[in-house]
Length: 439
Image (cartoon, rainbow, N blue to C red):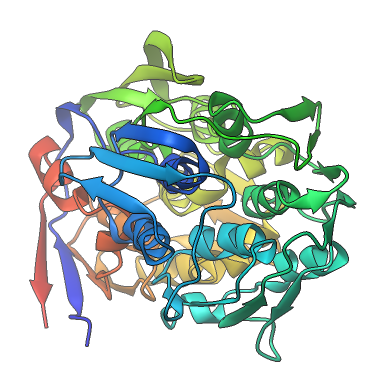
């Protein structure tokens, strides 16, 4: 039985100092997957030592890959080659990680063995048809529940997948990545066209491993004619984790924070663009490239944010950061309006409804819509809010304490450890008055 963790935040305070937040989760997942399929030994530094990424690591160990980790973000993967995975002896348990489940479904569809993917209660409610339906068009055999959710029973169809030309109905990096990984095992060419740009870590990392992938505007294509060659990967800090401190330092008067070695991949920087449109003081310093990924230090100081209409083209580039952006909007002068973000309703929780409920409890005028929210900036009060086991909701309301006029209690915060286990320590070191209690 997982322990219940409650966050308690004293109102007020400011953030000062410098920090290096945890490694990028998207890249940590992909480094394990592609390193396992590579020929040779891949060395990873900056790996995110959190439950989601570790679920991916364990899944590949369960498929016969030797992976060593020293616990300080250093991982050594002894690749088995593209066709070297072995049948797991039991279902692969992926905890809370939607990335693991969706990407692995594509990767395992073309193997010579059968597999079953399972997850925790939250993951078992998340929609998987968005990957299983296009995979079925490629010839994959994947059974789900009647609702289209996990467990996923995958019958390996080695040599029987066929490439497709797939136009995605909704922008999703996970769906794109799933189909590209399946395309590595399919006859002919697999093309994926997306309606709006999404994170491109899979394409960049495939290229880094020497596997040919073609990217032309909003279309990526791949064939089975390629091999992966081991490489060294330095995973930058996760901008999704940095976002909590970008918002916190923006809203808390007299704050001044330097966040080191943050990944600023252009498909991920929507949070910076949106905050700057709201008037945030964010400087991008020391820009350089590490393993094909752009990296920089981010310097942020406090300011009075202004409400805006969030441009829809930025929505897919900031999809994971909206819980904390809603907190920014609650502290801004005037109205902030978000549209085009239906995807938020099928994350770890319905992030539109859960954030609106919590903001209303704290006295904020926040009206949910089918695809977003309308927030009138003003005063944040105190109270007890429910995170519904969603780590980003929990951390967002913790940051809200910086501008609240009374303490905030946040229930059901155990899943913060699945994605950002250092959050509490980093936040308190920078000045957030946060404590936690276990039941």
